[in-house]
Length: 292
Image (tube, rainbow, N blue to C red; front, side):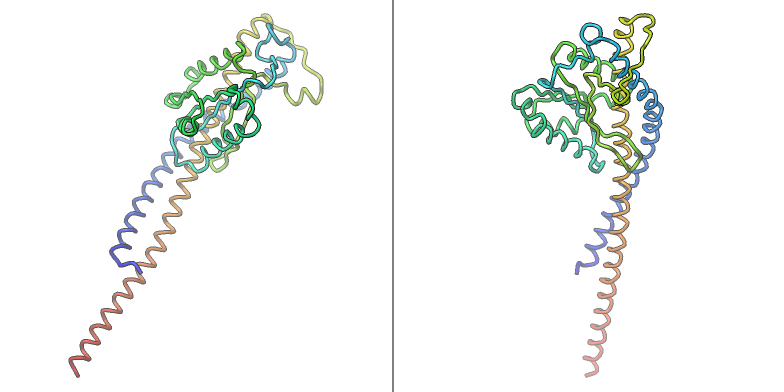
């Protein structure tokens, strides 16, 4: 059994760790509330706008009229990998990284081996993970320093420009979607080309839109803006999911530290009791020896 000094030292260490994890939990909870408000406010708007965008794209001819719906196959792929700049958030980052590894080894292995698969990492963790494996990857880690539409928009615009120019045939977003503080859903969404909405496929009855002011104006302004909003929404989802995952992880770490302290206290009390008993036995033995 460990001596009393070692147990006290370990108890002090666990108490310090518990203070840190408890503080991180409270910080994450405060950040989560702001991030959750941001995604809840934009999600209904972004969802409805994307639904309209998908239906609208079917009423605009692909090609020069609507370059964002051109289906060129899956020869050249861009994977936009979205996770966080920091760790200590459970499986938040590792789950995304695992999906990317599986895609490179499976579904997109031929494109990867031929050099037609490109990686864009948003988040330091994704960039470090991919770079350690010697994958060719670009990164935009600075977006989280000021996560607003004005800073995100140029990144989405560059991706859209590269797609229209033919640099990419498909663009996918891989990220964690925020459900609640304890639940995140791993998502892989096709960003480009624009997909037809499922409801339109089932009913096979596209809405006949009246274009005002003109079809060209709609394509040049509304569709690009809608795509930028979808990209921004994915980042907000991931940002809120990160804080939820970190708050949950730190809550579990704090509970584990409390449980460990309880066990250490029990061990300490047993060790102290054993030490006291041994001292009493030594005193009694010494007294008996003097009598003899």
